[in-house]
Length: 106
Image 1 (cartoon, helix red, strand yellow):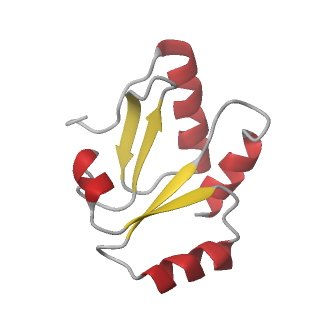
Image 2 (tube, rainbow, N blue to C red):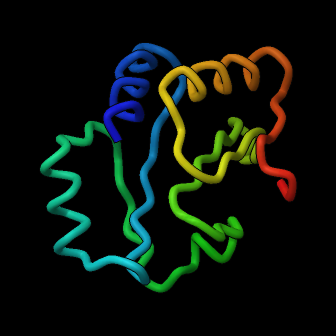
Image 3 (cartoon, one colour):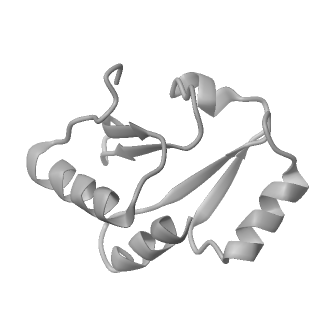
């Protein structure tokens, strides 16, 4: 979480937006809100109460990170832990090359 927050601060002045999605099928609203407050998450967080987002984006494991372009296309995806450097590199790849995925099935 610290790496995501740090990365979000690096791109505050750019057209890169971070959005968190809390899967309430695996967590409670209270726990999710406490987590957001504890880590002082600066970006918008949505609550997927019925698992709709996870089904639509085929999230099989948590965490899963996506980079979605301005047209709404998934340009990069990674399942599992993510470092700040990996995320920064992925954002630059998407900007320059249109993206690729670290997940085989994406």
